[in-house]
Amino acid sequence: MRRLWPLTVRGTGALILAILCLVMANEFGVTELMYFGILLLAVLGAGVASLYLSRRSDVVTRSLQPDVATVGRESVVNVRVGVRTALPTPPGVWQDTLPKGLSGDSKGIFPALGSGLRRSDRVVDLSYIVRGVRRGVHSIGPLSVRSTDPFGLARRQNLFGERTAVTVAPAIVDLPPLTDFAGETGGTLHTTTNQLGQGADNLVARPYMSGDSMRRIHWRATAHRDELMVRQEEQESTPEASVVLDRGALRWSTEAMHAPGSDPGFEAAVSACVSAVARLVHDGYAVEVLDSDGTVLADRIDGGDMAEVDAMLTHFATLTARRDDSLGRLARLFAGTMTGPVIVVVGRFDASDASAIAAVPHHSTLPMLFAVSPVADALDRAADHGWRVGAIDPDGDFAAAWGNAVGRGLSHVVA
Image (cartoon, rainbow, N blue to C red; front, top):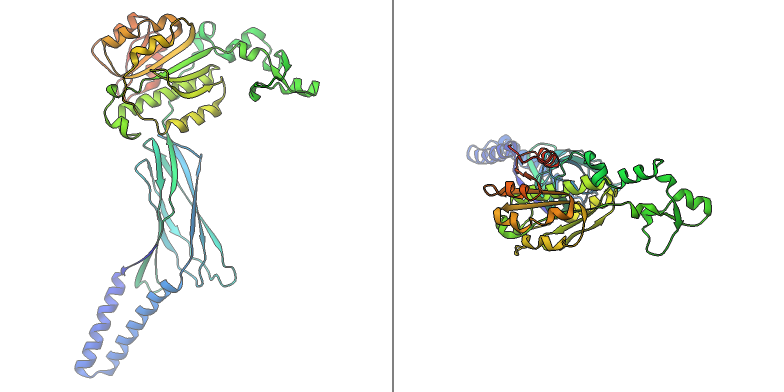
């Protein structure tokens, strides 16, 4: 799509002067004024014609580094513009349109291009830095390039309609590790080291069987025996952890159901959820991510598999609240079992909720509860039932709440 902008101030002045010269030449019979007026009109026409004659066929492609943007972190957008032009073009100014989910300085100088008679296709590479500000899937574009003719009399804007979808994942907070719980709830990294004392290369290997994860292949044993071998003890020594995000709409604002990034409280909860998952996986836990009704929000992530954490972040970019309220069903999910850490993240939380999930801590080696909007003494009541609790402030520091909860303290984070 191309659109001719109005004449510049210089061009408007030249047009007015040319018209006055022609009028005055006709009134006073001064031939020189007529010649001057015609010359000005010719220059204006040449300037406008140069913008049209330098037509070009452009294709715009964009790429992001890293591929998925993250709230609060910077990413680099690389823009490649394929250009074909018959005549040399002067430099211009380019600007890429950013959505509300991204911020940054997306403009710069578009370089001058030589004639394309000898080489028809050229590529112009542009880049700029953006910062994620709102979770979700957003579109960058269109790209506009504004240029003027060589005389500075007319302007033209080239608007390239291609848009690029960009995923903005929730923010990850770097949380303190659970180093104090190596004996009680330690992950695979702690357990394997404690049991063997000599590192993963000395694990007992067995032949590969159909269904075994490729991540468990023991490459040294495979090379020695010339057949696929897998680590025998890894699965046996992997403790599990569960992270629960309650998405019930009654605990959030109505905006949380409609679009990601619209409810600050829900955004803080999503960030807390993924941060807890990342911490636990990094510490060696096999983590399952659930809704309070038992719905699986992310496939089981093996300890140390940070690539799967990144895949979970992409999925959580579009996560919203749901209609039902099912926090009371949480106790049934863990009834009759004993598991490792259980991390629960909720929105509104009152005394009745504390009573409804009072049985869960008895089935977990490290029960932790975080609420965005606790009511009155609800967290104190939950702590009495065995939860390690903390309050999440959308503008506060979740790492502090996490650290205080791990230390068995009651934390109310202040911005």
